[in-house]
Image (spheres, rainbow, N blue to C red):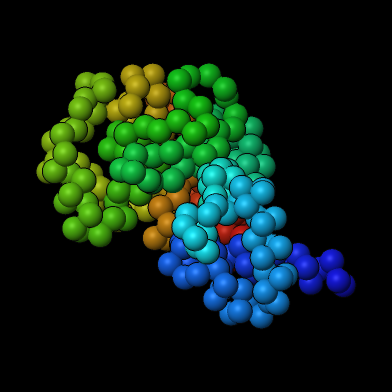
Length: 244
């Protein structure tokens, strides 16, 4: 019990110093935390030694380099990735295709999970343009009008002859995507690739989607509705496991 209390006090002081950012004297933070002055000074020295906090002025401290390094290793997507990966692997095997989980961030699509066929230029953590990918288009279709307008104001560079680069045409395509509930990449990213994507509706507003991709002879507008239905089944399974 004593060890647990000591750990709790240390963590409470670390949190208080980090959130305060050096604005308040450490002595006052120690009092607020309900610590004896000697105990607080000892804990501060320990946290400085471990580089979790740093002294920035006399009696004032802020988060340290080691804390920054640890924070950089924390992924906000970790639980979703852990849950989605086996379900996407199963879907990819059943469809004999490649399954992805992606997130819209920094106006690009970051691919968090890739399961199935390990060919092609894509890999986990790669970022691709949103306007010519299935995941990107299904997430662009969910943007509020002001954010979409800002996105469409930037130049759209063609990657294939089928890439939609006219803002009005892309806006129309996104409207159709929103209405049917799935996106189609019909050889827009690469000449030998087609893709169907659906959003993770339970995370609406969080900018996540999943997709299946493969040969455009199969992954094309004619087969899109059936493929999207199977993608939705996986999306619902992910939702259930997340507790939604």
